[in-house]
Image (cartoon, rainbow, N blue to C red; front, side, top):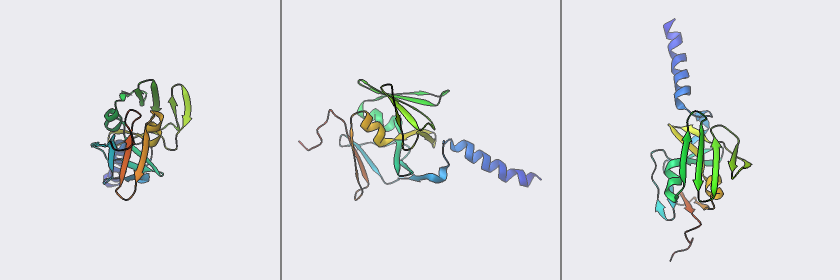
Length: 153
């Protein structure tokens, strides 16, 4: 009888402790992806992940790198990102985000993965006015903020 409950308990703990809003089976970890913000490598403790064709990144590690302020509201499971006059709000699991009071759809909602708040990279960066490019040959995501020129000096 105890053996029957043990596997169920392990499965339940795995699902609950995973912390994600989505099944972890849909997550593809991008261990060898390099993220550049204004030509500087940004290292985070959790690598970017791919969910349904969208790259999600840890919000604090990436967006602090280009000057955005991040606030996390744990009770509401909501993240607030501010940079200059832009304000973005996302709630874990919601299919939409608020950008300066406009509600916009998300291809993939924000989620918790390995204890980090993961947000859709392109949506957030472009909402803050940055340009995002992907180089498949080098596995590099490049984010250029509006203050930085995109060509070499």
